[in-house]
Amino acid sequence: MQTTEPINPCYRCGKERKIVKKWEEKTQGAKISCTMAVCPDPECQKKVDAQNARNLEKQLLHMKPHGKQPPNKQIVLGKKKN
Ligand SMILES: [Zn+2]
Image (cartoon, rainbow, N blue to C red; front, side):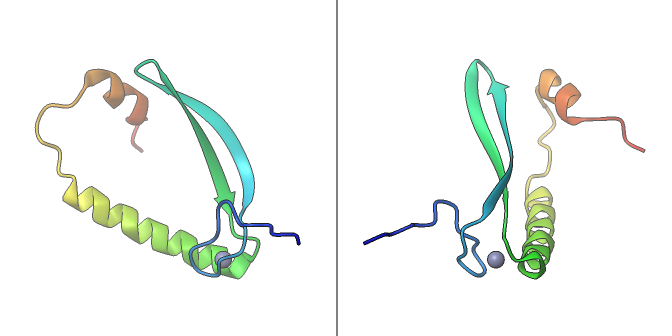
C-alpha cells in the first residue's frame, strides 16, 4: 500500500503543491526555513494567488502600526518605495 500523503496540499484542490523555492531566514538568532510552493494546476494557483493577495490586504488593514517599530526590521522590510 502506497500512501503519498500530501505534505503541503493546495487548500483549494488538495493536490500536493510543488516546491519552487527554498530558503533560510535568520530572525534574532533563530533560523527559519521557508518554502514557496505552488499548486500544480496553474488555473487553481491563479485563484490561490488572488485569494492570498486579498488576505494579505486584510491583514495589513488589521495590523495598523502602533507607533514604535523595530528600526532593524524597518530597514529590511522597507525597500525603497517607488
Ligand atoms: Zn490547487
